[in-house]
Length: 154
Image 1 (cartoon, rainbow, N blue to C red):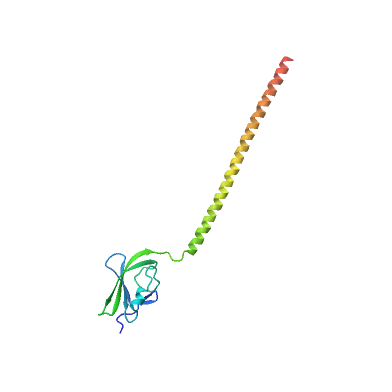
Image 2 (spheres, rainbow, N blue to C red):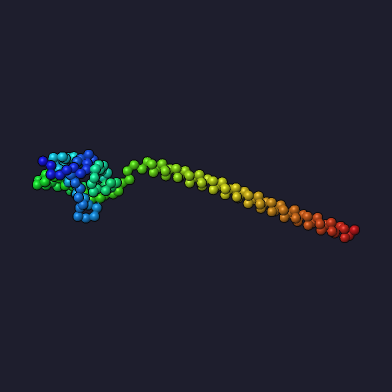
């Protein structure tokens, strides 16, 4: 006869309850022997467990099974768990967003480079025009000086 109900399923294995452990990041998952056998409990992928139902295990975390003990009084297995790491799950949507943003940045860099080339070309044109303008001004002054010299000698 069952002493507990079923709180959740962990990787499809019925779990009676999950309790907080004695230290931070530690938990104890209790499985009744009549609902789950040792082989099923050992086969649970604690690195990325699929949790269905309500229990204290934080979703999105992996765990390390520290110990599995059996109590003949309660006819249950207790798995001592410790948080191993957080996993992100399926990140395909985020990867697509990152790819799109990377393409946008590359496009903006190309636009900036084109603008820099345009600015450089315009600066060279301005320098050439200034140089040509200076030469024309010198030529005009020489022509004016020549005309003044011719008229004064005349």
